Amino acid sequence: MTLEQIAELESRTLMPTYERLPILAVRGEGCFLYDDRGKKYLDFLGGLAVNALGYNHPEIMAVLRDPSATLLHVSNLVYHAYQGPLASRLAALSGLDLAFFANTGAEAVEGAIKLARAYAQRDDAAASNDRFDILALENSFHGRTLGALSVTWPEKYRKPFEPLLPGVEFVRLNDLAHLRQSFSSRVAAIIVEVIQGEGGVVEVDGRFLEAAQQLCRTHDALLICDEIQCGLGRTGRFFAYQKFGLEPDIVVMAKPLAAGLPLGAILARRRVAEAFHPGLHGSTFGGGPLQCRLALKFLEILSRTEFLRHVRDIGEYFRRRLLSLQEEFPVIQQVRGEGLMLAAELAVPGKDAVRQGLEAGLLFNCTQERVLRFLPPLIIQKEHVDQFTEGLRPILDSILAAQPKGAHA
Image 1: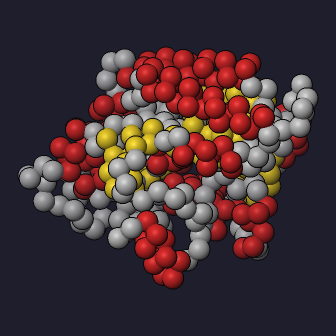
Image 2: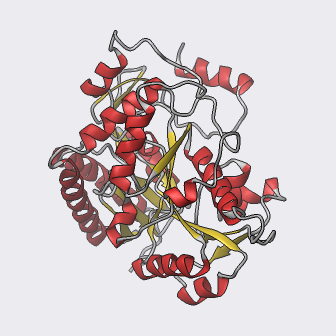
């Protein structure tokens, strides 16, 4: 079927929840995606940070083709050989103790909220029934299920589904006074993204994060780090919170964990995790054999000597190239991010830049109306960065030329 036929069929059969890009993807190789017409796209969106190893990675494909692996699924009522080793590896990398496996990031956030409330109510004799508040940050995005949506900031996502989870309060980003004012004996947890991805690749200040951790200790509340987009190597560290020496109580992750298959995880300190007991939480498909085998291979690759250093180095090179473009094209107001989670905020809407990028064989997206977001595979090389940034130059030139003279002086 052609792109036009697929689009027409979807218009009749799928709920209208996505604005598709006009690409009928048929295969991928390394950092490139190919459509049905054979056009090649340099992919700096990376499946929204899922394809951290690019497309058709030989070691990932070898796991998928392993003839000795015959289990696609078993229920979580029995053991299989891969959940335990994966949980152990994630604990070692994160500094936490116990894991729970889900399917998606939103599911992991839901489970983390449940765990935080279960921990707050763990001692029925002493716990107050009103200790269930969750603090989140303005500009945050944690998912689209009702619980995850409740701790997501933009009103456009929340408003159509209210009333949502009670007891959620939003703290002004990097406002230490408001952070301290927001804490009370009612607070069970605060959830933070060290770098807010959907919010426009906005970095949370280290002093703010350290203060949040200290306030959690003071109030016996939990610090939840959402590493769904910024974690698992994206910043050049296993987890973004490690930059600040934070010791979160709960960490949630997903996206690249199973190298393209659905897998999310909740990690927690033992004292927190023990608030869950059999029957209190579950997932039919979470932590299946194939997903866990892929995740173990992904973490093995991520752990190899120089892999994360490469992410840091190539990310810094990419950042410098973007800053150079900013000097040349003042329509770029700010370059921000870390590692291979970078963004260029424009002075004008960025939707047309995405369209022109597709025409030029460059794949990226725009969030927050004006922020061009770049989440390329972690395996990119300098030649990919050079090709991408050179491809951006005529796009930025055309956008700048379309603005009134002196508008960005």
